[in-house]
Length: 149
Image 1 (tube, rainbow, N blue to C red):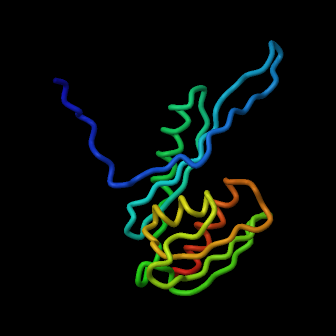
Image 2 (tube, helix red, strand yellow; image 1 turned 30 degrees about the vertical axis):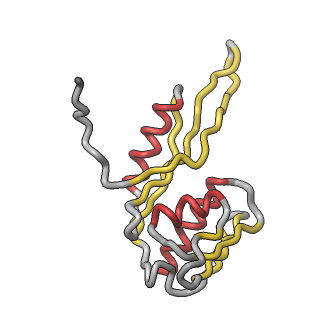
Image 3 (cartoon, helix red, strand yellow; image 1 turned 45 degrees about the vertical axis):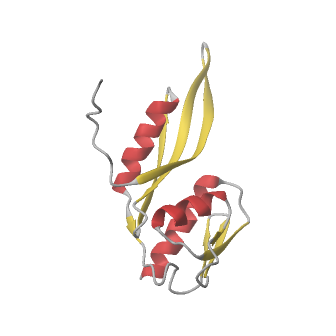
């Protein structure tokens, strides 16, 4: 049997989006991949990273490394956020509201990834204005940082 020598990371991760991007060069198109990764320890720390690479795995590794450099501390009170917050980032508008115990996470895909990995168990959230997952993740993290201050 082979032993797994890799150290277990303290953060859980979720790949929110992988997209194929291309640029046109003299000889044709150059194709690469872009990955958006959210990491968190489910106890109040969360971060996101965006990475590009020739292969999907390289893009995910780069995004994971960048996410570890952008960790944000989130204040959690009774498994929810302390107060409601609304934030606008670019064209993304985010509304986060605290919820009573037993409500669970009522949120869209990119907000759900961020708040679950942050450790928030009860929250009501809404995305308005933008379908960009990158802007929605950035707006959510800025809103969580704003609530924590």
